Amino acid sequence: MEKITTIITPTWNNEDYTIRCFDSIRKNTRNYKIIWIDNGSAEESRNKVCHFLDKNNIPYDLILNRENLGFVKATNQGMERSMSLGVEYIVLQNNDTEVYEGWLDRMIEVAKSNSKIGLVGPITSPCASCQSIEYLKEHNPNFFDLPEYNSNPEEYSGVIRKKYENESCELEIQLAFFSTLIKKEVIEDIGYLSEEFGVGFGDDDDYSIRAKIKGWKLYLAKDVFIFHNHRTTFKSIYSDEKISEMLKENKEKYENKHADFYDKNLKNENIGNNDSGLNNLSERGDKIISSVRFAVILIFRKLKNIVVYLKNGIKFAIFSPSNFIKKYFKYGKI
Picture 1 (cartoon, rainbow, N blue to C red):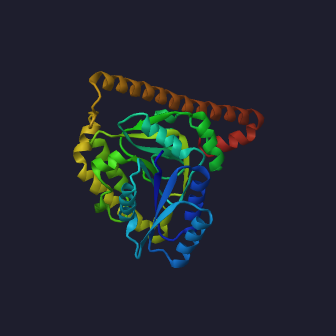
Picture 2: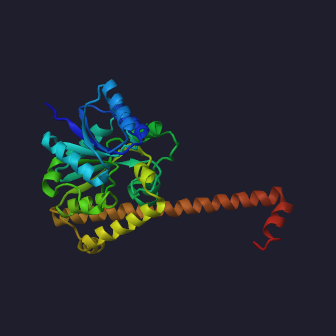
Picture 3: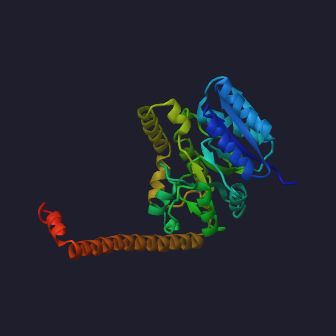
């Protein structure tokens, strides 16, 4: 009998987001159980979510905290409950996300494809994340041909699923824990999230590095797209200034904690890698080729923009010479 996967979601009020998240899980997921950790929400907010879950027969466990313990401690409560259920996989899922067809099955497939893949994440909508389509298109050669986002997340997820069917790629440093699948063996190996990061920020970076040091690989399922509203709960509690302060403090904390990792990684040394030297050389060669290809594509993109600009300028000069002269000569632009 196939074991269930637990989906861990801490919440603090924002019940509308939570219900949309849980509804998307209900519609697009099989063989799961939600571990919902309520961090001291208002009774009315909590009751709305309970009513929705019960009405729709959604499998869940509720861990009720009388006060807001923050993301890290609440997530650890969920991880502990999940491990007691004997699951093979857990998913850390923010309540301000929405999932789509086949998302969990596909991330499990990626995890099963290699015994050393320990954590798997999706790509996500435009936001301040290294997994956002904007960031990936500009910085990761595996995504140079990402389709433009059409502001319809469910439709876009279908486009991504079709374009990158059965594709995945390794990440060198970290995964953001807005929606991340973790093998139970990773948790048995390195434990839970580090509570030194307080209510949150940096805990996912820290966990990713701890996993890398132990030899676990981090992967993206290229064909899984998940919508993320990004930091909804934090923004409802803290000011932008306070969030920036916490981000800076925790960034310094995990960079100091893992200074040796960063030094070695910057020197292109392998951390916790048990592959043979030949395989490492082959992987590096593939990465170099991919990076060169990405650089060439970026150059052509820039050239294409320049050509378009020149063509438009020539048309402007031909069909409206007086306006062209007025615009470019009068104000000293030429």
